[in-house]
Image (cartoon, rainbow, N blue to C red; front, top):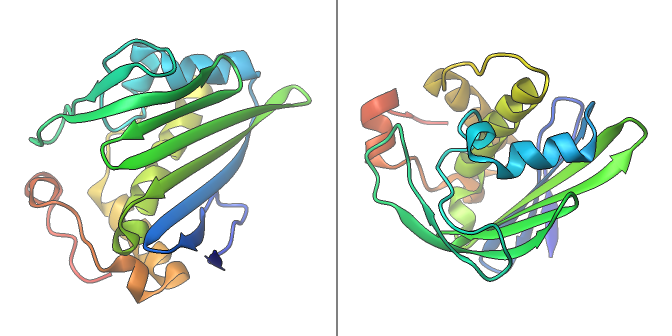
Length: 189
């Protein structure tokens, strides 16, 4: 497994390569107890403020899941709950990718380690920018702030930063046409 990129104070993810797979790992300290963070990760009303899809299905290991995009005309994706250990671990198959949320108490807060394992290395920068944006929204939600509308401009800025961090090979796949219809063409990173 090879490493690229860095994690810094701005919440950027770190890229690891595992064959053709990309693993992007984020670590963020959240100023909230694990129970509050867990609710934001698992309860539909909280998820709607930061996660890119709905999560329909039982909250239990092994359960079949269905993910629906609410702001982009993309077909639903299937998935499965791989691990569900309240207030410490949530892992799910999100289409072809695996998302893992690990929570560890840290004083009066929580360390969130989020890993997105992607089947296609070339989409690492694209998806890293999207997950970075989602995690920023999660932090706002936890702080009691109103979620800001999704910004294609912010995604493009982060996509450029992740392309620079991860390299061209990790940025060969751009956003879906449906995303570009809603948010404008991504253009070169």
